[in-house]
Structures are given as C-alpha cells and as structure tokens.
Image (tube, rainbow, N blue to C red):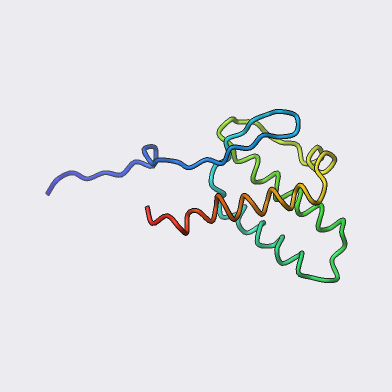
Length: 111
C-alpha cells in the first residue's frame, strides 16, 4: 500500500476582501465555529422583540470584530473603534453580505 498523506497547509483557501473606512484592506478567512455561533446568536437576538438596540449594537459590533480579526494580514481590529465608527446599517449590511456571499458560497461549492 502507498504512503498517503494530507496537509492542512496545502488546502486552497478562500478569502473575503474587506476595505475598512480608514482604508485598511483585510483578507478575511472563513469563520471558525465560535464565530459562526456568535453570528447565529446575533440572529436570535435580533428576533427577540425585548432586546434593546444597545444590546443588538454591542453584539453586532462584537460579531463584526470576530469576523474582521480572522484575517490573513495579522491586523487586530479594536471593538470600541468598530462600535464608534460603524452604524447599525453598515454592520448589518456587512454581516449579511459576508454570510450570504462568502460563507454561503461553501454550501454551493461541492469542492
């Protein structure tokens, strides 16, 4: 029998290119399980009518930071800066597009 091997270092990676308001460009990787869980909890939080706007904003900013900090550039995004610089509409659009177009592409690609 032949010697077979598998290397995680040789997997072709997908990236999501993001340009922040300050001009920084990030290559964001696929989310980890923890980030996906945080994105799901954000969805649950938005569906809860008793949730305050501040709770939604804080959770959304945290989810966005999780996504952005998982980048190939080694750049760490500050949660306080995200909360101060990005409004609810911007965060919602970013997270929706990230989930639908990038993460969702995995479901559509059998390879």
